[in-house]
Image (cartoon, rainbow, N blue to C red; front, side, top):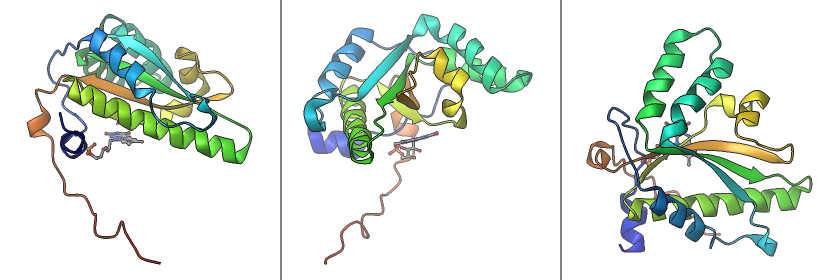
Length: 181
Ligand SMILES: Cc1cc2nc3c(=O)[nH]c(=O)nc-3n(C[C@H](O)[C@H](O)[C@H](O)COP(=O)(O)O)c2cc1C
């Protein structure tokens, strides 16, 4: 697959209606390859926790008891979506008390994440990066083993690509990206 095609054609898959399965071997290979992202001082400020298909239900129950206490409908909806996925990755970035190093860590994580989503797309695995407000909840963080010097920056929903064509390919607003000095 051409790099430009992957960049232009990858889309967030937001259809979770079917029972999906993904190739975990391909997933692990893509994660390893994504670490070729630029990262200053080779600090590799990234970590992912894989919630495999057979663990999604347990994870959803734990998560929704904290995120949506006593809201049965929301708990059930989350369970239905989560258990339909092929898996999930908790995305974790290393925090640094120094402003410059922290910025570098977060930027490097973005490069890693884009590499990862493109490599997964090439491998036939769809993604949607989710940043619900509960990722900042300390009890949710602890479900995924996030340490005090780390931030949970999202959950990557993993799917197949069967619904790719149904996803909107919205035109990007490229006209304002480049200005001259
Ligand atoms: C850092 C980040 C956070 C995102 N958070 C969410 C989210 O919480 N919920 C969601 O539905 N999509 C989320 N997305 C997906 C974006 O909405 C999506 O990338 C955007 O609509 C562009 O569509 P595309 O990925 O299909 O090109 C997120 C994407 C990024 C990069």
